[in-house]
Length: 297
Image (cartoon, rainbow, N blue to C red; front, top):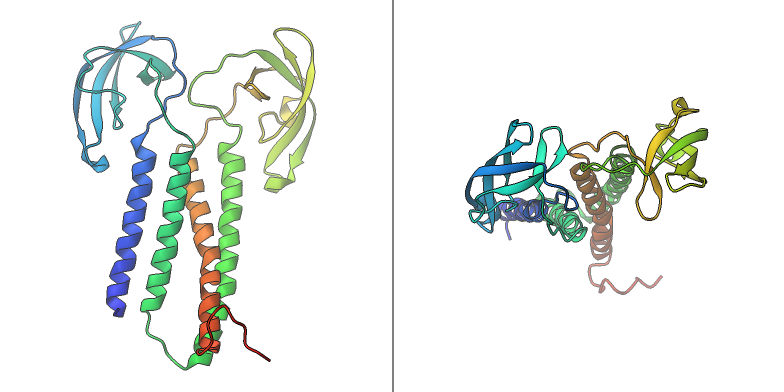
């Protein structure tokens, strides 16, 4: 296959994988657990969402709350449908509403599927693109080039994984969900230290928790849910079923999960590239020997 054909194939493969990842992430729009209706959606208008191949409805509506305040609501993943005429809505934020009925999002496999597709797209495109490049010099020069690039790819992959680690710890983990959570107790800091897993950018504190049902429990909370500035101040906490978390936490950045997915997928692709080149180097150094055999010395 000619070089320019391989470059077009690489771009087409990367585009297809990125579209597949976006399809998985956009197909389901999760809005948390079913909540109490505090508003009504009316004047619903829908059309097929052709970005998702017409498999979902893209709808808009006017939401009127109990105080008569009106807000425009849009959904691109069939939270509303043409069959709806008037839908009870629950509140997620001051101007953020969603239907007050259960929705199904098969988490976490859409996100994991998107990670796999992005990684496969980057890896395949990188391989085809490199194979399309004209070779200069002899076999020794090509082997030297591949060995030199392997270190850069491995280093860049490790940096991508480090970036994903910090994105998760600082922008995602233990940050507020986008639906309200009730306070089920209070917590007060007893001691705090910098969390050096994130180079001291976040706090890790021992917190004495007093549940509303009575008693006390001591728990270590990471990701700056409590900081040294909170010492001696009681703050609301809630029980998630396995651990206690602060209620009044900062909100997760809108694109944090997307950034983490891209960093993880990029890291996988970058680390996998030297492994692919290893077999190529072996083939160049031993052109007449099957790759599964090592040369006899």
